[in-house]
Image 1 (spheres, rainbow, N blue to C red):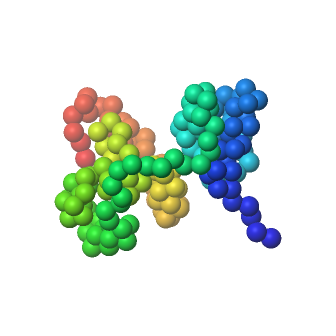
Image 2 (cartoon, rainbow, N blue to C red):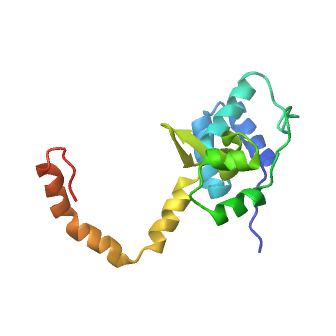
Length: 160
């Protein structure tokens, strides 16, 4: 049996239904997550659509976009990262001849507090945790009291 995977227009229709029922965007988002899990729209996307509905824009299809089309393929970006994963967004942008914000979008990154972080950071963190042996965490927990004592007694000074 195949699992139903809703497309974005279908989910927007559900949002419109909840908008008409006078539910909040946050409440509609919670319901989508309960029912569709990882296939649900992001909270910010739900809020954006509720804003459109409040402005009497009930068109669920994507609008035509102006602007230049994508100037590089994701495969090019992946290949560059495979060659050297330590490259900065600026370096990648120069190589691909696009702005670093275009590269960040290609990577699924956003800027928060001056640092580029993945949109889907949780998946990467879960993957990192799963890649570690349980002894890694036991060791960390075991040395935690000793390290915390060093933090407290260092009075803000660097220590190893």
